[in-house]
Structures are given as C-alpha cells and as structure tokens.
Amino acid sequence: MGNVRRLGVLVGLPFEAAILAPHHFGNMTVRSAAARPARARREAAALLASGAELLVSFGVAGGLDPALLPGDLLLAETIVDAEGRRYAADIGARAELLAVLNDERVRGGALLGTARVVATPDAKARLFAGSGAAALDMESLPLAEAAAGAGRPFIAVRAVADPAGRAIPGAALAALGAEGRVDFGRLLAALARRPGDLAGLPALARDSARAKAALGRAALGLARAFG
Image 1 (cartoon, rainbow, N blue to C red):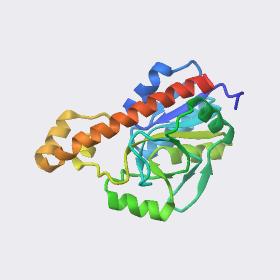
Image 2: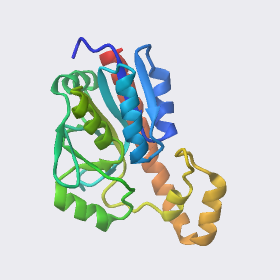
Image 3: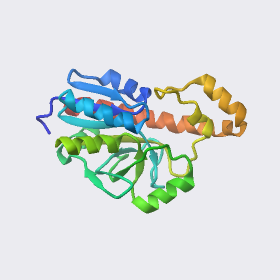
Image 4: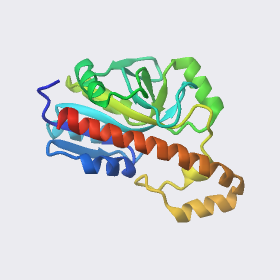
C-alpha cells in the first residue's frame, strides 16, 4: 500500500484519539464513534466522503481468546459479524504495518463486531466458542462494512484491555458519558449503589494502562508506515 496518502481512522473513545494525537500527520483524519455502533457507521461514511484511501479501526478491544493478555496488540486479518459474515483486512497495508511494528506481541486472527460491551467471562467464553474470534469491539465491523461497500481497503489495530477471564465492573460502564469520557460523578454514584465493584477497578486500570501503552506503539507505527 505504498501509494496510500490519506488515512481515515475511526476510534471509539476520546482517549484513543488522544493517543493518536502526537503521531498525527497531515493526511490522517480521525473521527470518534463515542462507543456507539450507529455513530460508527456514520463516522465511517464521513471518512470515506473525506477522501480516505485506507480506513483504520484503532483502539481497545475485549479479549475472547484466553491466550490473549492485556496489552497484546491485535492486527486483525478478518472482521466477523454475528451471522458469520467475514470482511478481510487489506493484506498489503497490514503487512506494511506489521513490518514497522516488529513486535512479538502483535497477533493476527479475527475481530468480532458487537453492538454492546461484553462484560463477563461467561459471555466472552460463549462468543469465543461460537465465533473463534480472538477479541471483539464495536467500531471495526461498521468500518469494515463501509469499506467493503465503497471498495476501499481497511485494517483494524486493537489492543486488548480486558482479557477473556476479566469481568468489567458495572460501575465502570455506568461512568461513561455520552461522548465516551469517564464522568467521575457518575462513577461515584454507581459505586454508592454497587460498592462491591470498587475491588475490580484497580485491575481494570492496570489492564487499561497496558492497552494504552500498546496503542502508543501502534500509533507510532501508523505514522511510520503511512505518514
């Protein structure tokens, strides 16, 4: 994909866009879906309309494969939906980014598209058994569908934040505001209702920090490969 000059990057949350910011180059456009699949479809269409030649899904993912650890980076080979339809990532662009990353913790495999957060190990295990996907997220599938409809290439770059065996405390989900930012007032209110969730927050924070570090390396890789 050496002829790619314009990247359209779709993220789900503001912190993912912030990770990209230091590595932003002139022909990169970044849009956020705010963790809403319907908005992800609109933002993917907007990226295509802006002239993006390569679409990129960038951010965190939930692990489904028990072998994946927090901070592992998934450069997906395919995106799969709930009905088993598959969308192949661009081979050339994926190879270019892999060559630049040169990271032993980069994995391949499939990403499962989901319309909601999957928060429990049991639910993750069922999805892994049914799909064989390594991880899941809410933005890669709408982006892959948009790319396929327009005949444009795409790749998906996702870091594991919550591994297959980790539950996401309900209070952490309740704390997300409309744009995907953590609202500490909502977090405190949720913890008042569910004080037991407090015990799970430190592990969630550690896992998230590992994922953010991996995304930092991936952002640098995008700039080196395509900037």
